[in-house]
Amino acid sequence: MLGANLWVEKGLVNGSIGTVLRIIYCANQGPPALPAFVFCIFPDYTGPTFFPEHPNSFPVTPIKRTWTAGHTTLSRTSIPLDLAWGMTIHKSQGLTMAKAVIDIGHHEMTAGISFVALSRVQNINDLLVNNFTKEHITRLAINDQILQRKREETRLCDL
Figure (tube, rainbow, N blue to C red):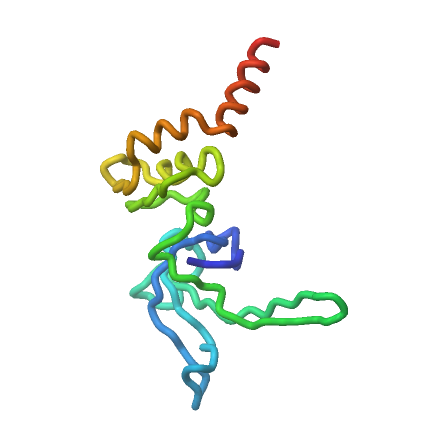
C-alpha cells in the first residue's frame, strides 16, 4: 500500500494498493541499506510505463520527511510502502476491495465502524465476516453514539 501522494493526477495516491515487482539497490549495496527504487505495479496508475510487459509499473523511491520536536529538527528517509495483507478499518476507509475478510471484533470503538468495514466490497459474495453475532447486532442497536445520532436525526426531521 502506498503511503504518500506521489502523483495524484496519474492515480498514485496514499492508500493505493499495488504489487512489488522488483527491488533495485545502488551499486555495491544491499540490505540493510534502503533500495534506490522499488518497482511496483499499481492497477490504477495511468502514467508512463517503466517495463513494457507491466504497463502499470512505477518506481517508488525513498522520501525524506522532516519535522520539529521542541527545538530539534528530525528527519526520516523511507520507502512509502506498507504491507497491506491486513489493515485496520480506519486505513481501509475510502478503498474499494475485490475481496475482504473482516474481523468485526467484540465491540464498536466508534459508531458506524462496522458499516465502514462491511462496505469495502461491491458484492456481498466477496465478503467473509468473523465475530459478527446476534449479540454484536444487539450491542450496536443500544450503542450510546448511535442512539444519540438517531435522536439528532429525529430532531432535525421534526424541524
